[in-house]
Length: 373
Image (tube, rainbow, N blue to C red; front, side, top):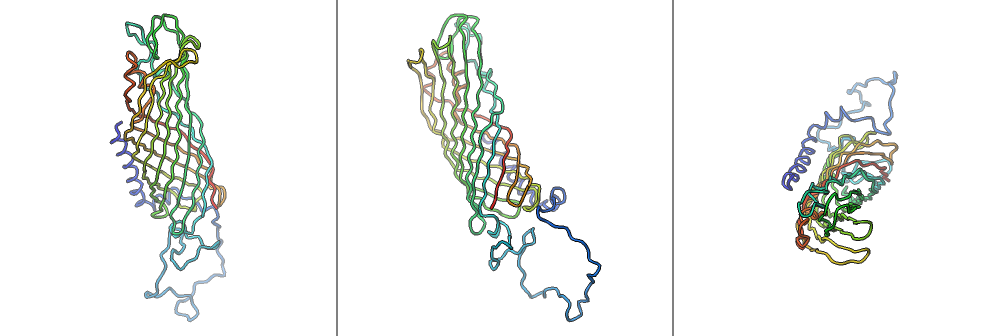
């Protein structure tokens, strides 16, 4: 999928969130549970209707009396209202929790490398091994966040998550081979390892537009290391394709909540998109034993794209604690990857003096515990 199509998909989700806000009453009826601290009431037979014409009766406010605008929770939102323990008019008024913290994990799987040949028969070119022989599982990583709500409701938030993805591949060449920067005879053993390390750090300003919809903008820093290495006949020779991507840039996003802020069950969808400068370097590095003997490498800076979609479902245990789980998708365009580099330079490693950029996709589960105070 091209960068334009992926950006359009993320933009469509953001617009859909805004459109869903128009259908909020129906969503309330379908998804809202009672507030975590909402108490039930019992009718009292002694309570009687009061004739409004009686002098002591409770009267409606007159048409010329000013009234305070209220949020969905029914609490007044006005500059004259002070934020105290007895008054919580929500993030829009700056009266929500001051601090937010989350501790959790992600279980992400990176997509399989492209099916390009990395070791082949010499000179016939019959494929012996492909980068797609490496198939990744769901790997666990840490996911933590911290946020502070400022006066007026704007939230400053920071999040970090990271995951390492690994797989191995062993084979013996049935004939003379070329690949991993070397040539050799038949019956040569290859022990391959593929490692991808992803680290994402972001700092955002989030602004609630209403009780359901918020928008954000901020800075994101993504580091992606992609390495594919082959040890030949034990440790006789080693060929390593290694690339480092350092992405720096701005992002925007939106979050739409499907339930009231005070409901026990919480459901939300969030999307983020951003353009980044990718400072990339890498190539092939060749060793005999543990001694470096040469290689071909390059460094280059290009414009990259990162998009993320998170779908979350949570349950409020107490006023201050929420447990949650969900599904996360992350894709990156214009990043340098080892598998692609190996396949395009099979017959001529010197081609790696120039970096080629490709795309990478992650998807999987996320879970955690959120605390507010």
